[in-house]
Length: 392
Image (cartoon, rainbow, N blue to C red; front, side, top):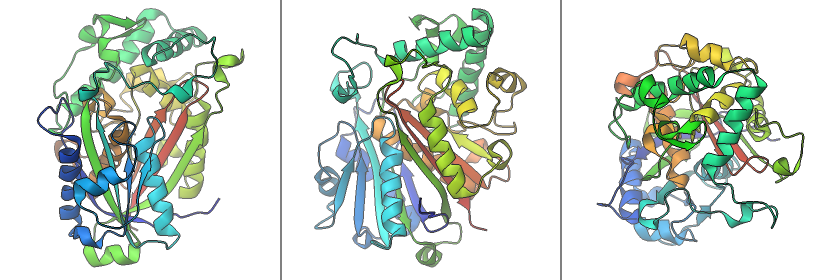
């Protein structure tokens, strides 16, 4: 695999407020996110040589972004890869810059789900692996992961549920300090424990919501980045891994880890030269579509030993003042999940944290940050990891 570490830099980023954005169209949201990125970078839109748009439902071609921004006669590529859409669009753009094909490119993620009428993510027909397989919406899939995890590691319902509740409380605390989050209020452990059940053992406050939003980044080479700003952020590692749809058809699928996470993380760690992720990563923003997902991610990423993430949750290791703060911006739990926008929203948070511009959520002395997405269904996931770092 070609190592492109330190060959790509982010010089600008933008992010809208996420939520029920009845006041904005998809075009409005893209314009808001992208023009914040242009202003942040000090770049004129005419300097953009190519663009990537990540979306699962907002249009079928890159022309949607071109029309919104009036990007005349440059290549605009539409990317879709389930919940990893935003980070995959970013990955593709990074490789184009590193290959020397373009000097200055834009990546934008967008989704306007509230207008769709779906109460959850729109269905992905290509995920169906068997005509006899029953429908299994995301809450059901991750509820199975939660019950299996509790059983596998000998946790009672009370122990397991309380551990998950602490993750929700942590993320809501972080989101309460973020004016761009859909939800900006604290919750208590008792509220999470007693919330209405969605898919046992996952209650209402264990699940992320459907939202609208957009986020964007402008990337270039480090040599060009120096002309625009001193605090540009470097791409250190990229990883992406897709499952082959066999998991639910195999008796050996254990539901206590997601191999696509592991593979994507290992790719990114290798590129970034990271050998001890628990100690070398300063903060992370991960795909907490459900609280159990975040718990399993801790172990898949190599931050907690298998079956021991509960101990790190109990000790506060993943809280803002802990050893490895996770979901410093509130995560999917507080932002919701506009599919194409989530990955770029995560990158936006890491970018701001590494620049020291995250306000009351700021992680002290942050030098390396990680963004992670997980999309699809067990056995057929796409895992995606982006590692960013400050310039040496």
